Image (cartoon, rainbow, N blue to C red; front, side, top):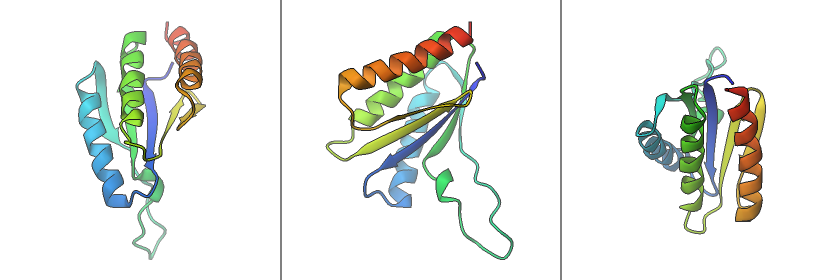
Length: 128
């Protein structure tokens, strides 16, 4: 297992400022866990002559995990709690680890549990 989990957040109707605020709050929560670091996803350089920002970098985090299943499971649990705190607003989390992608939104909790368990089990075994 690599030690970098890429996380991309989105919320229905959220503008860039709202998404940035949500991302900063979630970053603080994740830093309280047993992780190496949590950094903002870096945008690529804008094309020459433009001042545009990379919209894909807004809401993006890179979580540096310790090589333990417990670190990974704690991060996943925190992300799932964030997803549920949407107060009826559709939220989505896209996770990427070792080339595998898991996207969670408003599927039923049992289905979400099943998908998360598959993702966690695969990457926990790979990490030893």
